Length: 118
Image 1 (spheres, rainbow, N blue to C red):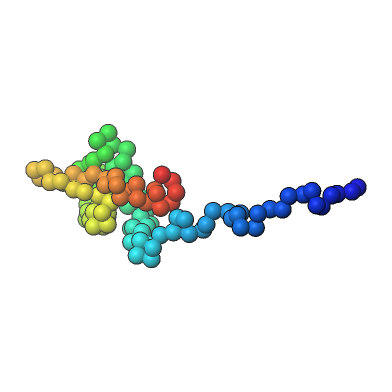
Image 2 (image 1 turned 30 degrees about the horizontal axis):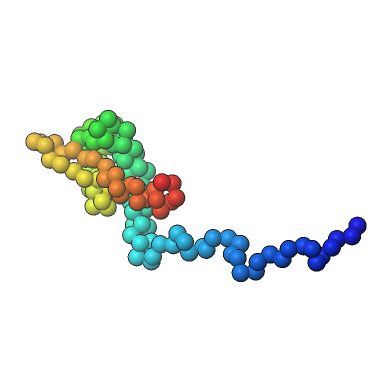
């Protein structure tokens, strides 16, 4: 078999073969902040709390409802809610004797975007 090498086109050596790896790079400061959020979410009870709140029609619940749903003590649920609140994943509003918790959608969207899921 004869192959005419001269007739074959040469690949342009200046054209990149792949998109640059640094296109989606986050800064060290962003990585540190995101790592702190992922540490908060590494606790199974906190993931359950977020999941329970997210599936509610209004995406909010009273703290007392979470105690019963998770079968955890009130102080334990309050601690986890406080951690999620301080991480900026939840917002809260006092209504009479109750405190209602709601997911901060922008914060979860940031995590999704970082993971390439959104």
